[in-house]
Length: 561
Image (cartoon, rainbow, N blue to C red; front, side, top):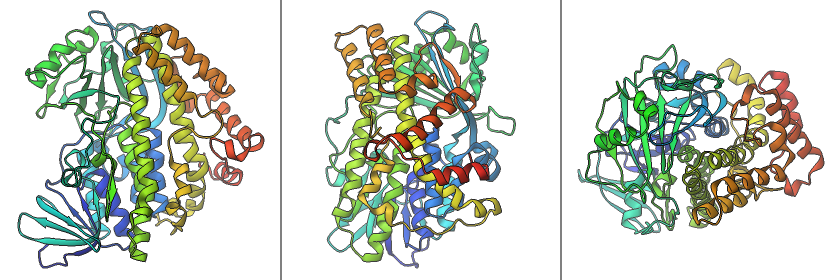
């Protein structure tokens, strides 16, 4: 953008990563004057590469709500590989968890694998670059390699001052710059110390020459999908490691594998040892992990963080909003960051467009969303804290992971699929098949506070307290009030007494450690039976989600489901 162009905008977005550029794309598509300012440039290294079915559904919702077909590509492996680049994604067909004990080969009896269909890993430097270009295509302006020296916010406008001496004015500011948020620093929004229970740090890089996990396991007969075709989590007492390959499908020319070692920072405090040496020292304790990295080499500098967790006492104010990564962060386990980012953007974009139309940017309009964002942080913190505790013992981990997957399905994926996405897919089906622009939608519902219940990932309605009950059991282990084995038994009992669904679908049985969920007739028939049971036999006010029968019938007729 040249200095001769206008310096007055409806919205300025600080940061052009995946969150900032997605929001910029949507706002620009709907005729808002948008400026993105970023101190860096694209393409560039970024992590946050693993996604889940919940993430994919949120991306699809954004695409259909706001009539941006290009966002739909990101919601599937096929969409990315065929429309963006085959090397912009890895194949993700499963969540795999391998439990390790120090000095021992990994045991076949301590493995869990859940098939999830044809999902993907996001090679962020290509995906983020794609989104930035998409935002510019729709009319957003981009200032790269630009340092902001000051931000002034008053009742009437926001003024951004850059080190080149330029001033840019806007009606509203969205901070999408992450941990180094200028707004959080300027307005002293950070909580010190962070309010979160979780304590973890991370060591990560990109590598080549990482062996497929399957080649490093002594016995490998029970898994239903090759381990290397999914996200592998190496688990041990005190932490975990992600292994995210981008070279695990036939069309890829990308040799990269993303690696991250995550440690409880209270048990494993940061030292003066280099990140690479610390990584090598640590994996040498676990023979099966060490084997996987015998020929591996990093292709960029290692990064070692301090404590990952940070929080803010507020993420809104006069004419500004902080996206989740600018406001706080918990931990990469289960990939909650992208889920929370897209959950926030769905209503935030509509609220901003409404504010532009009415010239009313009052904080009160954004306050319900800010409350939800803070509550989701606290909820995710409870999940993460208990996950690290559960990693002390395989039986406890096995039970706890079932709590996570159930809440992920009931509070996230299936709720959004049945209540929102299925109807949108049916409505836009002709345009989708013809590869045309989706129909314009009435965005009013997205601005109403009652809509936030729809996207709230926490289980709601009937028997919603099973997560809190399970958290209480895990925390008793940390306090030495229960043994891990006792807590595991109690958690399974909680799950199976909460609903007949848990036991019927198979995930409520700890002995079932290998399930390909999309292909499991038992799992899918159980979930559909549950959805119809909720529809006809449970009161509306206590339903976890609502199945729209017309949308379901049309979805079956059109082959959408």
